[in-house]
Image (cartoon, rainbow, N blue to C red; front, side):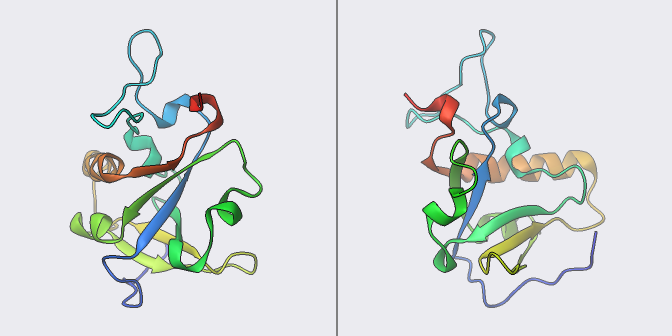
Length: 142
């Protein structure tokens, strides 16, 4: 993982959007395979939604620099959730802009390099529990 620094241009109140792949591994299911719903009646995300097994860095979009349509343009079957930047920071993660030629809003949530796998999973769980659905993945749409 590259050495990253927390970006002061991203406030704790800034919204980060995470695209949710249209795959049941990204949400909790009961014994029958049905989505587990939270108290608001929305599907509960699994910690997989905020974990990356390759680099550890989680790709997100800084909401104020993009639109939902743009984020989902090439992946219309995916879903979209949001959290504030304060949530990953509360578990000692770094939030930083990582713009690309195609996407100025691209950002990263980066765990400290020294975090164990179990602590990273607990941090991802906290982020997933704090996330709010904006768009459900196609297989969860009624």
